[in-house]
Length: 444
Image (cartoon, rainbow, N blue to C red):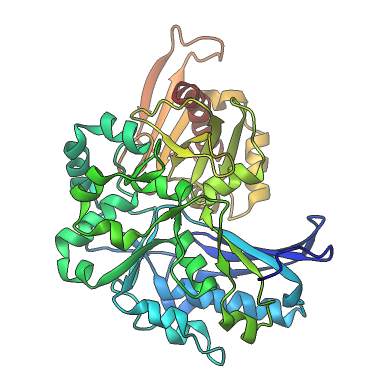
Protein backbone atom coordinates (compact mmCIF):
# COMPACT_ATOMS: atom_id res chain seq x y z
CA UNK A 1 0.00 0.00 0.00
CA UNK A 2 1.29 3.46 -0.93
CA UNK A 3 2.75 5.62 1.84
CA UNK A 4 0.81 8.91 1.94
CA UNK A 5 2.64 10.43 4.92
CA UNK A 6 4.22 13.81 4.14
CA UNK A 7 7.91 14.44 4.88
CA UNK A 8 8.56 17.78 6.57
CA UNK A 9 10.54 19.03 3.57
CA UNK A 10 7.67 18.36 1.14
CA UNK A 11 6.75 20.71 -1.68
CA UNK A 12 3.28 21.41 -3.04
CA UNK A 13 2.65 22.41 -6.66
CA UNK A 14 -0.35 24.56 -7.59
CA UNK A 15 -1.48 25.64 -11.05
CA UNK A 16 -3.79 28.41 -12.19
CA UNK A 17 -5.16 27.73 -15.69
CA UNK A 18 -6.78 31.07 -16.44
CA UNK A 19 -8.15 32.80 -19.53
CA UNK A 20 -4.86 34.42 -20.51
CA UNK A 21 -2.14 32.30 -18.89
CA UNK A 22 -1.02 29.21 -17.01
CA UNK A 23 0.84 29.85 -13.77
CA UNK A 24 2.65 27.32 -11.59
CA UNK A 25 3.63 28.01 -7.98
CA UNK A 26 5.61 25.71 -5.69
CA UNK A 27 5.23 26.08 -1.92
CA UNK A 28 7.17 24.42 0.89
CA UNK A 29 5.55 22.86 3.96
CA UNK A 30 5.53 26.28 5.67
CA UNK A 31 3.66 27.81 2.71
CA UNK A 32 6.69 29.79 1.58
CA UNK A 33 7.05 30.25 -2.18
CA UNK A 34 9.87 28.12 -3.55
CA UNK A 35 9.51 29.15 -7.18
CA UNK A 36 6.90 30.27 -9.69
CA UNK A 37 6.63 30.27 -13.48
CA UNK A 38 4.13 31.84 -15.88
CA UNK A 39 3.14 31.10 -19.48
CA UNK A 40 1.23 33.91 -21.22
CA UNK A 41 -0.67 32.28 -24.07
CA UNK A 42 -0.52 35.17 -26.54
CA UNK A 43 3.22 35.77 -26.23
CA UNK A 44 4.60 32.31 -25.38
CA UNK A 45 2.36 30.46 -27.86
CA UNK A 46 1.85 32.95 -30.72
CA UNK A 47 1.20 30.20 -33.29
CA UNK A 48 -2.30 29.77 -31.85
CA UNK A 49 -3.10 33.37 -32.87
CA UNK A 50 -5.15 34.13 -29.77
CA UNK A 51 -5.83 37.58 -28.38
CA UNK A 52 -6.21 37.66 -24.61
CA UNK A 53 -6.06 33.86 -24.72
CA UNK A 54 -9.18 33.45 -26.89
CA UNK A 55 -10.62 33.54 -30.40
CA UNK A 56 -13.53 35.91 -31.00
CA UNK A 57 -15.50 34.45 -33.90
CA UNK A 58 -16.44 37.31 -36.27
CA UNK A 59 -18.98 35.11 -38.08
CA UNK A 60 -21.02 34.07 -35.00
CA UNK A 61 -22.16 36.79 -32.61
CA UNK A 62 -20.92 36.11 -29.11
CA UNK A 63 -18.91 32.95 -29.91
CA UNK A 64 -15.63 33.01 -27.97
CA UNK A 65 -13.41 29.93 -27.70
CA UNK A 66 -9.85 28.83 -26.91
CA UNK A 67 -7.76 26.16 -28.69
CA UNK A 68 -7.70 23.12 -26.42
CA UNK A 69 -4.19 22.10 -27.51
CA UNK A 70 -2.88 25.50 -26.39
CA UNK A 71 -3.67 24.64 -22.78
CA UNK A 72 -1.78 21.35 -23.14
CA UNK A 73 1.26 22.98 -24.72
CA UNK A 74 1.27 25.58 -21.94
CA UNK A 75 1.52 22.73 -19.42
CA UNK A 76 4.49 21.36 -21.34
CA UNK A 77 6.20 24.74 -21.30
CA UNK A 78 5.61 25.57 -17.64
CA UNK A 79 6.86 22.16 -16.48
CA UNK A 80 9.94 22.53 -18.69
CA UNK A 81 10.63 25.94 -17.13
CA UNK A 82 10.29 24.46 -13.64
CA UNK A 83 12.67 21.69 -14.63
CA UNK A 84 15.25 24.19 -15.89
CA UNK A 85 14.99 26.05 -12.58
CA UNK A 86 16.48 22.95 -10.91
CA UNK A 87 13.32 22.24 -8.95
CA UNK A 88 13.45 18.89 -7.20
CA UNK A 89 10.18 17.39 -8.46
CA UNK A 90 10.63 14.34 -6.24
CA UNK A 91 9.92 16.50 -3.18
CA UNK A 92 6.45 17.46 -4.49
CA UNK A 93 3.93 15.60 -2.32
CA UNK A 94 0.74 16.89 -3.95
CA UNK A 95 -0.44 18.80 -7.01
CA UNK A 96 -3.68 20.67 -7.58
CA UNK A 97 -4.96 23.72 -9.39
CA UNK A 98 -7.72 26.06 -10.45
CA UNK A 99 -9.26 26.47 -13.87
CA UNK A 100 -11.30 29.21 -15.49
CA UNK A 101 -14.91 28.32 -14.79
CA UNK A 102 -17.47 27.04 -17.31
CA UNK A 103 -14.99 26.26 -20.14
CA UNK A 104 -15.46 22.77 -21.57
CA UNK A 105 -13.34 20.12 -23.30
CA UNK A 106 -14.74 17.36 -25.54
CA UNK A 107 -12.74 14.12 -25.60
CA UNK A 108 -13.17 12.05 -28.76
CA UNK A 109 -14.24 8.40 -28.55
CA UNK A 110 -11.16 6.33 -27.68
CA UNK A 111 -9.18 9.18 -26.09
CA UNK A 112 -8.98 7.43 -22.72
CA UNK A 113 -6.39 5.11 -24.26
CA UNK A 114 -4.28 8.12 -25.24
CA UNK A 115 -4.38 9.43 -21.68
CA UNK A 116 -3.35 6.09 -20.21
CA UNK A 117 -0.44 5.39 -22.57
CA UNK A 118 1.53 8.64 -22.78
CA UNK A 119 5.11 8.40 -24.03
CA UNK A 120 7.45 10.23 -21.59
CA UNK A 121 9.94 10.83 -24.42
CA UNK A 122 7.49 13.15 -26.22
CA UNK A 123 5.85 16.44 -25.21
CA UNK A 124 2.19 16.16 -24.28
CA UNK A 125 0.98 18.40 -27.09
CA UNK A 126 2.28 16.02 -29.78
CA UNK A 127 0.27 13.15 -28.34
CA UNK A 128 -3.19 14.81 -28.24
CA UNK A 129 -3.59 16.04 -31.82
CA UNK A 130 -6.44 13.62 -32.47
CA UNK A 131 -7.92 13.45 -28.98
CA UNK A 132 -10.74 16.01 -29.16
CA UNK A 133 -14.02 16.00 -31.04
CA UNK A 134 -14.19 19.79 -30.59
CA UNK A 135 -10.84 21.49 -31.27
CA UNK A 136 -11.83 24.87 -29.84
CA UNK A 137 -13.21 24.88 -26.31
CA UNK A 138 -16.11 27.23 -25.49
CA UNK A 139 -15.05 29.48 -22.60
CA UNK A 140 -16.76 31.65 -20.01
CA UNK A 141 -16.72 34.73 -22.26
CA UNK A 142 -18.99 33.06 -24.82
CA UNK A 143 -22.53 34.47 -25.14
CA UNK A 144 -23.83 32.56 -28.18
CA UNK A 145 -26.28 30.19 -26.45
CA UNK A 146 -29.27 32.40 -25.63
CA UNK A 147 -31.71 30.05 -27.39
CA UNK A 148 -30.42 27.04 -25.46
CA UNK A 149 -30.67 28.93 -22.16
CA UNK A 150 -34.35 29.64 -22.75
CA UNK A 151 -35.00 25.99 -23.64
CA UNK A 152 -33.37 24.74 -20.44
CA UNK A 153 -35.30 27.21 -18.31
CA UNK A 154 -38.58 26.23 -19.97
CA UNK A 155 -37.83 22.54 -19.37
CA UNK A 156 -37.94 22.98 -15.58
CA UNK A 157 -40.67 25.61 -15.31
CA UNK A 158 -38.79 28.85 -15.75
CA UNK A 159 -35.61 30.73 -14.85
CA UNK A 160 -36.30 30.90 -11.12
CA UNK A 161 -37.04 27.18 -10.91
CA UNK A 162 -33.77 26.39 -12.69
CA UNK A 163 -31.97 28.67 -10.26
CA UNK A 164 -33.54 26.98 -7.24
CA UNK A 165 -32.47 23.60 -8.63
CA UNK A 166 -28.97 24.32 -9.99
CA UNK A 167 -27.99 27.53 -8.16
CA UNK A 168 -28.28 29.81 -11.20
CA UNK A 169 -30.71 30.70 -13.92
CA UNK A 170 -29.44 29.67 -17.36
CA UNK A 171 -26.41 31.71 -18.39
CA UNK A 172 -24.92 31.66 -21.89
CA UNK A 173 -21.42 30.92 -20.59
CA UNK A 174 -22.53 27.97 -18.46
CA UNK A 175 -21.51 24.55 -19.72
CA UNK A 176 -24.98 23.00 -19.98
CA UNK A 177 -26.21 25.44 -22.65
CA UNK A 178 -22.87 25.05 -24.46
CA UNK A 179 -23.26 21.26 -24.56
CA UNK A 180 -26.85 21.60 -25.74
CA UNK A 181 -25.75 23.90 -28.56
CA UNK A 182 -23.12 21.40 -29.74
CA UNK A 183 -25.66 18.58 -29.65
CA UNK A 184 -28.26 20.58 -31.57
CA UNK A 185 -25.93 22.05 -34.20
CA UNK A 186 -23.37 19.24 -34.57
CA UNK A 187 -24.96 15.96 -33.35
CA UNK A 188 -22.26 13.91 -35.05
CA UNK A 189 -19.62 15.71 -32.96
CA UNK A 190 -21.57 15.09 -29.76
CA UNK A 191 -21.98 11.40 -30.64
CA UNK A 192 -18.22 11.15 -31.22
CA UNK A 193 -17.56 12.48 -27.69
CA UNK A 194 -16.88 9.98 -24.91
CA UNK A 195 -16.17 12.45 -22.10
CA UNK A 196 -16.85 16.11 -21.38
CA UNK A 197 -14.54 17.87 -18.93
CA UNK A 198 -14.42 21.32 -17.42
CA UNK A 199 -11.09 23.13 -17.70
CA UNK A 200 -10.36 22.14 -14.10
CA UNK A 201 -11.09 18.42 -14.53
CA UNK A 202 -9.39 18.45 -17.95
CA UNK A 203 -6.09 19.61 -16.47
CA UNK A 204 -6.39 17.11 -13.62
CA UNK A 205 -7.03 14.37 -16.20
CA UNK A 206 -3.75 15.14 -17.92
CA UNK A 207 -1.92 14.82 -14.60
CA UNK A 208 -3.42 11.46 -13.56
CA UNK A 209 -3.43 9.89 -17.03
CA UNK A 210 -7.17 9.19 -16.93
CA UNK A 211 -10.47 10.98 -16.71
CA UNK A 212 -10.70 13.00 -13.51
CA UNK A 213 -14.11 13.71 -12.02
CA UNK A 214 -15.74 17.11 -12.25
CA UNK A 215 -15.83 18.48 -8.71
CA UNK A 216 -19.11 19.45 -7.05
CA UNK A 217 -18.26 23.13 -6.77
CA UNK A 218 -17.09 23.78 -10.32
CA UNK A 219 -19.83 21.42 -11.52
CA UNK A 220 -22.42 23.82 -10.12
CA UNK A 221 -21.36 26.31 -12.81
CA UNK A 222 -22.91 24.17 -15.54
CA UNK A 223 -26.70 24.52 -14.95
CA UNK A 224 -26.72 20.70 -14.73
CA UNK A 225 -26.26 19.86 -11.04
CA UNK A 226 -28.76 19.72 -8.20
CA UNK A 227 -26.92 21.85 -5.64
CA UNK A 228 -28.75 20.40 -2.65
CA UNK A 229 -28.12 16.77 -3.62
CA UNK A 230 -24.69 17.55 -5.12
CA UNK A 231 -25.60 15.21 -7.97
CA UNK A 232 -26.47 15.60 -11.65
CA UNK A 233 -30.09 16.64 -12.15
CA UNK A 234 -31.82 14.07 -14.35
CA UNK A 235 -34.45 16.50 -15.60
CA UNK A 236 -31.84 19.04 -16.77
CA UNK A 237 -29.58 16.38 -18.27
CA UNK A 238 -32.49 15.02 -20.31
CA UNK A 239 -33.35 18.52 -21.51
CA UNK A 240 -29.73 19.11 -22.56
CA UNK A 241 -28.63 16.08 -24.58
CA UNK A 242 -29.12 12.29 -24.65
CA UNK A 243 -26.68 10.07 -22.77
CA UNK A 244 -25.12 13.06 -21.06
CA UNK A 245 -24.66 11.50 -17.62
CA UNK A 246 -22.25 8.92 -19.01
CA UNK A 247 -20.23 11.60 -20.81
CA UNK A 248 -19.95 13.71 -17.65
CA UNK A 249 -18.95 10.90 -15.29
CA UNK A 250 -19.30 10.97 -11.52
CA UNK A 251 -18.94 14.09 -9.38
CA UNK A 252 -16.39 14.37 -6.57
CA UNK A 253 -15.86 16.76 -3.63
CA UNK A 254 -13.54 19.63 -4.47
CA UNK A 255 -11.05 18.50 -1.81
CA UNK A 256 -10.94 14.80 -2.82
CA UNK A 257 -7.92 12.96 -4.22
CA UNK A 258 -8.24 12.56 -7.99
CA UNK A 259 -5.45 9.98 -8.19
CA UNK A 260 -1.68 9.55 -8.26
CA UNK A 261 0.54 11.43 -10.68
CA UNK A 262 0.69 9.63 -14.03
CA UNK A 263 3.81 7.57 -14.86
CA UNK A 264 4.47 10.03 -17.72
CA UNK A 265 5.34 12.81 -15.27
CA UNK A 266 7.25 10.52 -12.91
CA UNK A 267 9.51 9.43 -15.76
CA UNK A 268 9.81 12.70 -17.69
CA UNK A 269 10.16 15.13 -14.76
CA UNK A 270 11.04 12.76 -11.91
CA UNK A 271 7.94 13.34 -9.81
CA UNK A 272 7.63 10.96 -6.88
CA UNK A 273 5.37 8.14 -8.09
CA UNK A 274 3.28 8.55 -4.90
CA UNK A 275 2.63 12.25 -5.56
CA UNK A 276 -1.09 12.97 -5.05
CA UNK A 277 -3.21 14.87 -7.53
CA UNK A 278 -6.00 16.64 -5.66
CA UNK A 279 -9.20 17.57 -7.47
CA UNK A 280 -8.86 20.83 -9.34
CA UNK A 281 -11.74 23.29 -9.02
CA UNK A 282 -12.84 26.60 -10.50
CA UNK A 283 -10.78 29.74 -10.05
CA UNK A 284 -13.45 31.58 -8.06
CA UNK A 285 -14.17 28.72 -5.60
CA UNK A 286 -10.43 28.30 -5.09
CA UNK A 287 -10.10 32.04 -4.42
CA UNK A 288 -12.75 31.68 -1.72
CA UNK A 289 -10.84 28.75 -0.21
CA UNK A 290 -7.52 30.59 -0.41
CA UNK A 291 -8.93 33.63 1.34
CA UNK A 292 -10.20 31.28 4.08
CA UNK A 293 -13.61 32.96 4.19
CA UNK A 294 -15.36 31.19 7.06
CA UNK A 295 -18.05 33.50 8.45
CA UNK A 296 -21.34 34.22 6.67
CA UNK A 297 -21.23 37.87 5.68
CA UNK A 298 -17.53 37.84 4.80
CA UNK A 299 -16.97 38.91 1.18
CA UNK A 300 -14.08 38.39 -1.22
CA UNK A 301 -13.38 40.48 -4.30
CA UNK A 302 -11.45 39.26 -7.34
CA UNK A 303 -10.41 41.72 -10.06
CA UNK A 304 -9.30 39.61 -13.02
CA UNK A 305 -10.27 39.08 -16.64
CA UNK A 306 -13.71 38.98 -15.07
CA UNK A 307 -14.56 40.68 -11.79
CA UNK A 308 -16.27 38.63 -9.09
CA UNK A 309 -17.67 39.21 -5.62
CA UNK A 310 -18.25 36.16 -3.43
CA UNK A 311 -19.07 35.07 0.09
CA UNK A 312 -20.37 32.08 2.05
CA UNK A 313 -23.69 31.04 3.54
CA UNK A 314 -25.29 28.08 5.29
CA UNK A 315 -28.78 28.87 4.00
CA UNK A 316 -28.76 29.80 0.29
CA UNK A 317 -31.70 31.33 -1.54
CA UNK A 318 -30.91 31.22 -5.27
CA UNK A 319 -32.55 33.97 -7.30
CA UNK A 320 -32.52 35.45 -10.78
CA UNK A 321 -29.22 37.25 -10.22
CA UNK A 322 -25.95 35.73 -9.10
CA UNK A 323 -24.91 32.16 -8.40
CA UNK A 324 -24.90 29.62 -5.58
CA UNK A 325 -22.24 26.88 -5.52
CA UNK A 326 -21.37 24.26 -2.91
CA UNK A 327 -18.59 25.53 -0.66
CA UNK A 328 -15.33 23.90 -1.88
CA UNK A 329 -14.00 23.25 1.65
CA UNK A 330 -17.18 22.86 3.73
CA UNK A 331 -19.38 19.94 2.72
CA UNK A 332 -22.43 21.51 4.38
CA UNK A 333 -21.97 25.11 3.27
CA UNK A 334 -22.35 27.13 0.08
CA UNK A 335 -20.72 30.06 -1.67
CA UNK A 336 -22.62 32.89 -3.33
CA UNK A 337 -21.13 34.87 -6.20
CA UNK A 338 -21.71 37.64 -8.72
CA UNK A 339 -19.70 37.83 -11.93
CA UNK A 340 -18.98 40.71 -14.33
CA UNK A 341 -17.49 39.96 -17.72
CA UNK A 342 -15.98 43.40 -18.32
CA UNK A 343 -13.07 43.28 -15.93
CA UNK A 344 -9.35 43.76 -16.50
CA UNK A 345 -9.49 43.77 -20.30
CA UNK A 346 -11.93 46.67 -20.26
CA UNK A 347 -9.86 48.57 -17.69
CA UNK A 348 -6.72 47.97 -19.76
CA UNK A 349 -8.49 49.31 -22.83
CA UNK A 350 -9.37 52.54 -20.97
CA UNK A 351 -5.82 52.73 -19.62
CA UNK A 352 -4.34 52.35 -23.09
CA UNK A 353 -6.56 55.06 -24.56
CA UNK A 354 -6.41 57.63 -21.77
CA UNK A 355 -3.33 56.89 -19.65
CA UNK A 356 -0.71 56.07 -22.30
CA UNK A 357 -0.89 52.39 -21.40
CA UNK A 358 0.55 53.18 -17.97
CA UNK A 359 -1.08 52.18 -14.67
CA UNK A 360 0.85 54.89 -12.83
CA UNK A 361 -0.74 57.53 -15.05
CA UNK A 362 -4.13 55.85 -14.62
CA UNK A 363 -3.74 55.97 -10.83
CA UNK A 364 -2.57 59.57 -11.02
CA UNK A 365 -5.70 60.52 -12.93
CA UNK A 366 -7.82 58.92 -10.20
CA UNK A 367 -5.89 60.71 -7.46
CA UNK A 368 -6.45 64.12 -9.05
CA UNK A 369 -10.12 63.52 -9.84
CA UNK A 370 -12.71 64.98 -7.44
CA UNK A 371 -14.80 62.56 -5.39
CA UNK A 372 -17.76 61.35 -7.52
CA UNK A 373 -15.94 62.67 -10.62
CA UNK A 374 -18.15 65.79 -10.84
CA UNK A 375 -21.12 63.49 -11.52
CA UNK A 376 -19.55 62.05 -14.68
CA UNK A 377 -20.07 58.32 -15.10
CA UNK A 378 -19.22 55.89 -17.90
CA UNK A 379 -20.52 52.37 -18.55
CA UNK A 380 -17.99 50.38 -20.58
CA UNK A 381 -19.02 47.06 -22.11
CA UNK A 382 -16.29 45.78 -24.37
CA UNK A 383 -17.97 42.36 -24.22
CA UNK A 384 -21.60 41.36 -23.71
CA UNK A 385 -22.09 41.98 -19.99
CA UNK A 386 -23.39 39.34 -17.60
CA UNK A 387 -24.67 41.57 -14.80
CA UNK A 388 -26.66 43.46 -15.78
CA UNK A 389 -27.21 41.59 -19.09
CA UNK A 390 -26.32 44.26 -21.66
CA UNK A 391 -24.88 44.30 -25.20
CA UNK A 392 -21.49 45.66 -26.26
CA UNK A 393 -21.37 49.44 -26.06
CA UNK A 394 -20.00 52.49 -24.22
CA UNK A 395 -22.34 54.95 -22.51
CA UNK A 396 -21.60 58.26 -20.74
CA UNK A 397 -23.79 60.26 -18.37
CA UNK A 398 -23.58 63.39 -16.24
CA UNK A 399 -25.46 63.44 -12.94
CA UNK A 400 -26.12 67.13 -12.38
CA UNK A 401 -26.55 68.58 -8.86
CA UNK A 402 -24.96 65.47 -7.34
CA UNK A 403 -23.56 66.11 -3.87
CA UNK A 404 -23.09 62.51 -2.72
CA UNK A 405 -25.50 62.82 0.19
CA UNK A 406 -28.78 62.28 -1.66
CA UNK A 407 -30.21 61.77 -5.15
CA UNK A 408 -32.91 64.36 -4.51
CA UNK A 409 -32.81 67.04 -7.18
CA UNK A 410 -30.31 65.12 -9.33
CA UNK A 411 -30.93 65.11 -13.08
CA UNK A 412 -29.24 62.81 -15.61
CA UNK A 413 -27.94 63.92 -18.97
CA UNK A 414 -26.57 61.48 -21.55
CA UNK A 415 -23.37 62.45 -23.36
CA UNK A 416 -22.41 61.44 -26.88
CA UNK A 417 -18.66 61.69 -26.37
CA UNK A 418 -16.32 60.15 -23.84
CA UNK A 419 -15.06 62.32 -21.00
CA UNK A 420 -11.47 61.23 -21.44
CA UNK A 421 -10.78 60.29 -17.81
CA UNK A 422 -9.96 57.03 -16.08
CA UNK A 423 -12.24 57.77 -13.15
CA UNK A 424 -15.66 57.04 -14.57
CA UNK A 425 -14.97 53.35 -15.21
CA UNK A 426 -13.86 52.89 -11.59
CA UNK A 427 -16.74 54.97 -10.22
CA UNK A 428 -19.25 52.86 -12.11
CA UNK A 429 -17.67 49.59 -11.02
CA UNK A 430 -17.57 50.46 -7.34
CA UNK A 431 -21.14 51.77 -7.36
CA UNK A 432 -22.18 48.42 -8.79
CA UNK A 433 -20.24 46.55 -6.09
CA UNK A 434 -22.10 48.51 -3.41
CA UNK A 435 -25.43 47.74 -5.07
CA UNK A 436 -24.77 44.01 -5.47
CA UNK A 437 -23.56 43.62 -1.91
CA UNK A 438 -27.27 43.74 -1.12
CA UNK A 439 -28.01 41.10 -3.75
CA UNK A 440 -25.43 38.75 -2.24
CA UNK A 441 -26.85 39.14 1.22
CA UNK A 442 -30.34 38.44 -0.14
CA UNK A 443 -29.01 35.26 -1.78
CA UNK A 444 -27.65 34.09 1.56
